[in-house]
Amino acid sequence: MKKILSPVLKYDKYPKGFTILHEENLTIGQKYDIPSKFIYAVNMKTMEKLEEIYKKNNNIYRKDLIKADNTEKILDGADSIGVILDYKDKKVYYLNSIPNLAVIGTSATYLQVSIGIFSALFSLMFDKMKNGIYFVEDLFDKHYKYYMFDNMRIQEFVFKKKNNNFVIDKYNPEIRLKRKNKFEHLYI
Image (tube, rainbow, N blue to C red; front, side, top):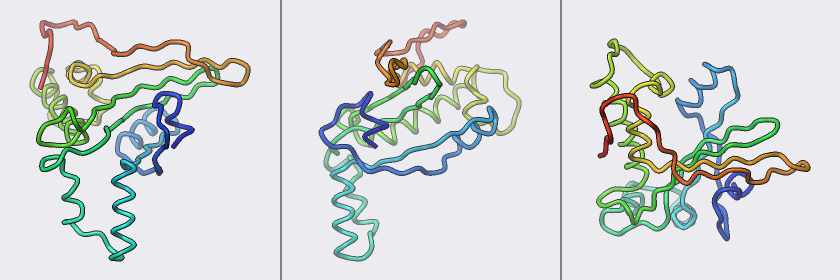
């Protein structure tokens, strides 16, 4: 994960991660005929504890996972989600990180998921959409994107290729969208 994360997240040690299938990657890849990957990593301390439990018991039970619910004891670390766009001459990262400490009664992961769900619900309520099934990429010209950007701090990092290396060219600490409608903010 160091190669992927180190340009935008500075850690002493990087987590282990792996590629998994995720609905958005499959549908976006298919729609735009581009390769797409979803990379997932668990907090390093959590992963070390789960590996320890697995080595001891040869299994992991629900009671072992419940320790990571962020309601009884605040979890360490943050949940980071992002997108990397690879071009021949540049790389663009879009990143959201939410510390578990900033979330009360749930985890940062659940907060990120709930923002996505509420964003879709606002699109259904305020946009004239026909009944049906919609994927994330179908909602981006709707209220969805405003709700997402109002409730998740999205950072943008642009790296330009220089002498076969990528160097930071532009950094936007928080993307803000201009609205075309009457809504000023849509907050949870």
